Image (cartoon, rainbow, N blue to C red; front, side):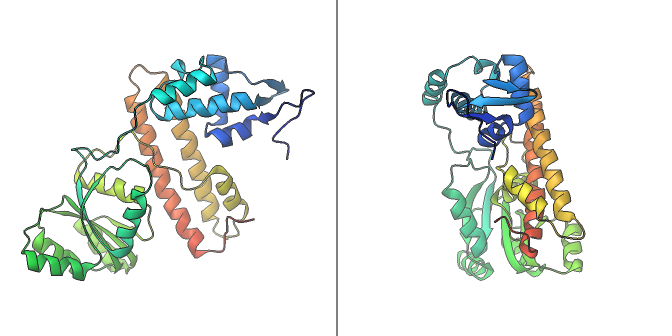
Length: 314
């Protein structure tokens, strides 16, 4: 591997592509920063740029602060110690469970398990889970006993093995004003059409928690743009591996990989443009929407991988 280039002083140097992978900053952004803020690489060989280990550390700290909402213009001239001091002085980021977060009920064992796993992460929450049931039987038993005395959530997310309209009628008997989001493992075309005509969103299981949040927020009437990016499901290296192993004659996985790459690049471009604006919020909202679009494609890619023979190993 030629990611590192030793010099006469044995200093480790990293190619710009390697720096991009290690920091999460795109090659295009690194080059733009070189032009605008004099964040120049330690060495150049023709058109190839090489960064030192110290520069790599500096860029990693800058990336962390940018993710917290600080502009590159206030960070580019800071030393590593100054960047570390700024990080240490930042207040802890609160978990997003604001008054504007929609109240949500969950029905389904796997769904509740997914939500509990998400609680262990430090990702901000966009929805407020108020009630949980392992299955429809548990939900109905509690409602019959309580006679619908509990507070009505704004949205109910329901996981079913087979998509059916009958559970909808039972839920609406107790919660007539609650909006619904349905997750399913198996279905027929006519069932999907019925839900589409009824305006009830459906998602095929398995699905990421981020996609559930996005669907719930949209269904509840809250702005879909929260100014927050959905975490990536696949790294650039994994996408490259998937594309290179794609033996599907339809080439659908390869096309999805290319589209995900394009959306990642577009999100980076929107973020770069936002940093140059006096009012960056519109472009940051665009960046957030792009990340949600990318998350949908990643779920589709995951479905193809689960059903096919493509592996990320090797």
